[in-house]
Amino acid sequence: MEMHLLCIASGRETKKAIHLAREKVAKAINCKAKDIYFTSCGSESDNLAIKGICYKNKQKGNHIITTKIEHPAVLHTCQTLEKQGFEVTYLNVDNNGCISLYELENAIKKNTILISIMSANNEIGTIEPIKEIGQIAKKHNILFHTDSVQAIGNIKIDVEEMNIDLLSMSAHKFYGPKGVGALYVREGIEFEKLQDGGHQERDKRAGTENVAAIVGLGEAIDLAYKDFEGYNEKLKKLREYYISEVEEKIPNVKLNGDRINRLPGNANISFEGLNSEELLFKLDEKGICASGGSACSTGNPSPSHVLMAIGVNSKMAKGAIRVTFGMQNTKEDVDYLIENLIQIVSELRS
Ligand code: PLP
Image (cartoon, rainbow, N blue to C red; front, side, top):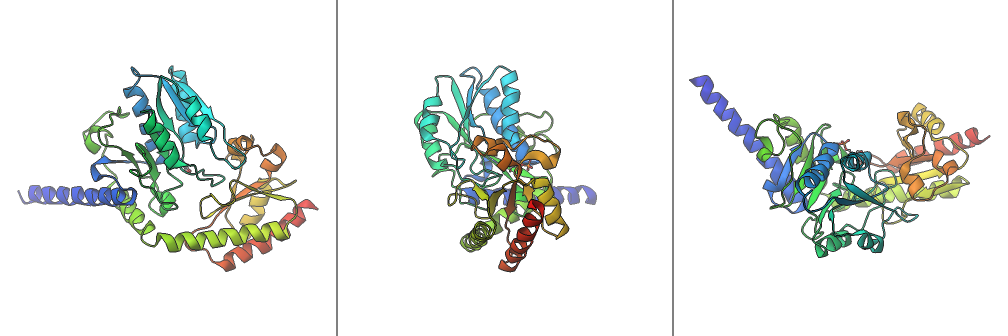
């Protein structure tokens, strides 16, 4: 009997903890707590949003609009849907990685059921005109999903003001634990679940909740927006300093993505004539972590689809590296990085 009571009490505690996390997420993006569904990651949130909406609305139409620069979690989901009879328009972007609102509106057809456009790009950091996309979607009565995996914690997102109907996020991108994500779905929008089983997450995502990770996600999103302005300013300063030093001190480089309208900590630069893998290896030897602008580092030799979409030639795309500044970085870190980059680039070029 005592054991039974204990279990009820701990079950209640768990429910409370999850509810609190849901409220924190809701506060951060200005929605209702009950419109948040916890998932295992950003990819799952994207799949659930896009497939969930398409399967539910297939009688209404079969056309989706997205962009050429989405993360594979969205692109591959769309490709799967194409195999199942859905039609997908992949919008072009300009040289900075920004979509054209004119092209978006022109792509809308009678059978369009969903627009899925990322809030900010993971490789080049470009921020898309989310509010304007939301207005177009609303005007045409089409649902709007945005992959905000890179945006949450880095830019302010208000689902009401921006007319966002569905939004994906992933905790580890804002200093939360790995292996937990969330999906926002506006009240009243129906979507199909992808996983059968129990009644968790209001019957939309079966499976025992990862309670500790969900609590961590809630804490992390709360903290991310507590000193948002200060954090944002700090990252922007580091990024600007890095970009200007590289442009001044290293010849034949090119910044990829929008110079101003980009994620505060993102700097993606191409070093002409170099191979990013070599560059990353040398930086790693100096204790510096960066990423390639292409998928080379994951064993895929083809150049980045994002850099190709913004018109970077394959030679420059091969030599692109992305540096992401974070909360713990200092100006001294940037100086150390630049000092090493100057030396490594000159060695590799000679
Ligand atoms: N979408 C974007 C824009 C991302 O950058 C990522 C991961 O880097 C994902 C989706 C996938 O998120 P997760 O790794 O949590 O599945």
